[in-house]
Amino acid sequence: MKKKSILIIDDEASFARMTKIFLEGKGDYDVSYETESMKAVETTRSTNPDLILLDLVMPELDGGDVLARFNDDPVLKSIPVLFVTSMVSQDDTSDDSLVQSGDNIMIPKTSPPEFVHQCIQDKLAGVI
Amino acid sequence: MGNTAPIFAASMECVEGRVPQITVICAVKAEEDCHSFQEQLDFGDSLPEHFRVIHMPDFEMVVEALNSETSYDVILLDLLLDAPEGVDTLENLRKLAPYLPIIVFSEVNDMDLAIDALGRGADDFLPREYIDYPQLVARSVFTVIERRKQDLDKRVLQDQLIQAEKLDSLGRIAAGVAHEVKNPLATVQMAMAYISTLVPDVEDPQFGEACELATTAINRASEIISGMVDFSRNDCVAIKNGSLNDVVVKSVDLLRYEINKNKTTVHLNLDPSLPASEFDIGKMEQILINLIRNSIQAMQSCDKVIHLSTFVVSPEKRENSPWLQELAVKTGSATLIALEIRDEGPGIGDQKPAALFEPFFTTKRIGEGTGLGLSVVMQIVSRHNGLIRLKNMKNPSGLRTRIYFGVPPVTTTLSPPETQTLMKT
Image 1: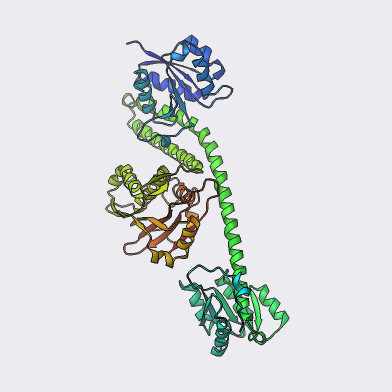
Image 2: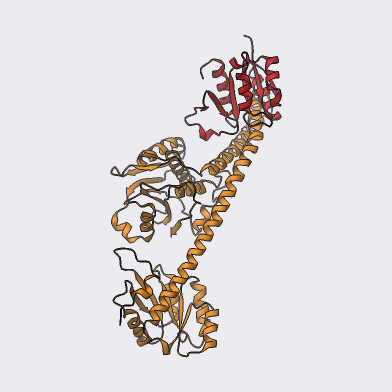
């Protein structure tokens, strides 16, 4: 089965790199990351990922701005995005459900990594 | 004697429907002096206050009285009570009762003595030659009580301001720190999840245990950070109509795993006639979860019981408690309801209750608590204009925590948290 490609956009390089290692360890993904949000659109175009993990609080362009730019682009707007952010905590989510802001889903950054993985699988399967 | 009420009307608070009683320790040698004080204070049937004068002819009696549970409003101290020490007696008394008004009564009208007594902690100085002067004793009593009350109000207000400022600063710092710490924490969590997958491939038998320990430690750090975020967010409450009983049941359900794991029994005694009330349901659950968790951890050993109850405060109980009366007035509530959690743990010993509600105060062993639980409880209760009382219980020993609310409670979002922490041990 062809591996799914995931792009992480997060200014915290060590988190992005570690998430890449963790997800690639699962064997089903090719993961790349971009730590400069100003380059997010450009990198997304060149990597054409199946899913984007997007940080919310970043210098220069924040996650909301990056998403707005994706939505302005006829190709990029169709790529599924999951926000992974430290702005929400697990206590904001009840019964393991996710925090939803409009159409956007927010995963707390300090969620158990397996939970993050489950969310990725569900998003790729179109369940969430 | 004419109508003297106007002189004093402004000095004392009068709760409607009750005759306030002022209890006076009359620390004078001669019984006839005590009688004349009583007469002086009884002069005004027109006064709304009733004086209870208790004769204590020696210093030991006074000490015993001050160490008892009875509360007194003022001491009338004869400088000859413990002759020849005189003003030394006053100093000793002041140490025993730092905030109780003391009026010194002296055989001689001596200015130097008066200044000395006032300098050593007396609130007023009454020479014998003046005590028959109409209204003078009563006026002195009212004045010193009122002055002390104002001092106390000022001190309480200052404490509240300091506390509010500390909590506010901590909240702001916590929010910032939490965000910054979450990133590296998430990285380590991710790393541990990855490393743990390698356990079967590593020959070192301790590798798996090391991974587990590191993961537990990281999860704990994450818990502390979440606690700090909760603490910093408690500045606003989302009020809805709900049943306190439902919140209790749901909170117990949420903690079912911990309760069973510790073989703790939870007895519910929920008053079915409890009226619906208005509160922030999520925050109220948080109060219960924090308190139940504290009780489970405090009890340590298994097979112990936590009693959870709710009830409507009876009019008699309310009538007998100045705190509850004040709560009713403050919240404008005709009905007061209470939530009670009683455990079989060691209680809180001699801890000052205010300290228990300080952020990061904990008596738990390292690894068992963040020290933020009770301060979050306090903050939420304050936002609901409620009142917390803690009491060490005997037979069986344990801690009883009661939280009182008005129905409906008047909630605040902007006022600084109030520290109405009271304890009776």
